[in-house]
Every structure is written in C-alpha cells, then in structure tokens.
Length: 251
Image (cartoon, helix red, strand yellow):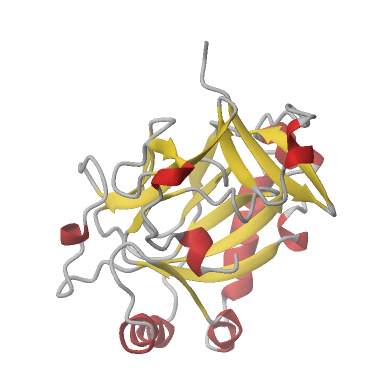
C-alpha cells in the first residue's frame, strides 16, 4: 500500500481534508536581474537588520522593494504568462504575494499554516549552486534567476547545496553569498484550475477533521512533521523546534 498523505486545512470556518499532491510544476521565465540598488538593499536587510542564519526563511518588505523596482510588473506578468500555459489563467492576480529570503532552507512543510494553498515561487538570484529539493517525491530543481515552481504546501522541501544529500549549516558559510531571494504567491488550493493541475482530491477523510482544531498533515492516519536535516517524515512528537518557513513567516 502506498503511503497516504492528508492535509487537514481551514476552508472558511470549516476544517476539510484533502490529498497532498506529489506533483511539482517547474519552468524558467525570461526576467532581467533586479536593479543593483535593490539587490544591495536586500543584502543589507538580510545581513544587518535580520541577521539571517543558515536554514532560516524570512520575509522582506515588498512595498519598499516595489518603490525601487520599476519592472516589478514585468516579473509578475512573466509568471502569469507561464502559468497560463498550464491552464492557470488569472489565478495569480487574486493570490497573496510576498517577498522572501533564505540562506538555504531546512526541510519543512507548510501545511500546518497554509494547507489551503499551493505555493508559486519565482527565484530572483543568479545560480549559487543550490537546489530546491523535495525528498519525498525526488524532485530536485536547480535554482537560478527565473526559476519558477508550483508545489503543494504539504510536501516536505528544503534549499540545499547542489549534489548534497541533505541540509547542513556548514554548507552556507558567512563569507559566501548564499542568499536566495524569491517572490511567493499563495494559490488557493480550492481554485478549480489549481486543484486540477495538482490533481487534488478533497474530503478524503471526512470524519477526521471533526476531532481537530488546527491545520496539520497526516501520514497514514497520524500527524507527522519533517526532519529538518534529512527531509524524512517523523512523528509530530519528534519536532526539533527549529524555525521553518511556517514558523517564521506570514506567507
């Protein structure tokens, strides 16, 4: 029997259940490098103001960035055009967007906070020898400027050094520019085009959500978390307490 992943998520005031998709949609769009002044501002933000540590994922001020980013709308349009080729027309314009930064990312899932969404990420930096890795599905995506990815928030993922087998702090030394900056959109999982593209089944465990009061991911009927170094599923009682995208951001 194949492992059964279930996301219990809020749909309005009701907890629903759904399948967790193994599908990862990826491509590359033709975008220019962000303005040098803007990239310098991002470096100051993550270095001086935030002190971004290896493995952490933090938000950057998007409103301020847009004031220094005259071509911002071109970046959004490039992603919208790519999504249109997948049948995801006009989904982006109604989805919440945020600007994020990381120096690598420990493995995590975001289904404990964003179970009602899929993420669409557009990476803005040059190739720094890092991959977006989905250990449960085997997808490993080289990150470079213009890489765009859509995936289920319930799937474990991390940003690791290319050719490595897992996340390690030592792979992101302070003297090396390891920062990734990306735009991320929350695509509503109940949108017909999104659920069809990711082949989501809804109300897969109709009786279970009645016992719950928060979003969570289950594996074969039991709540699970993710080992932050290996990306393997583990019991929710084995969580390490290390910050993940779900712990440290509002996207």
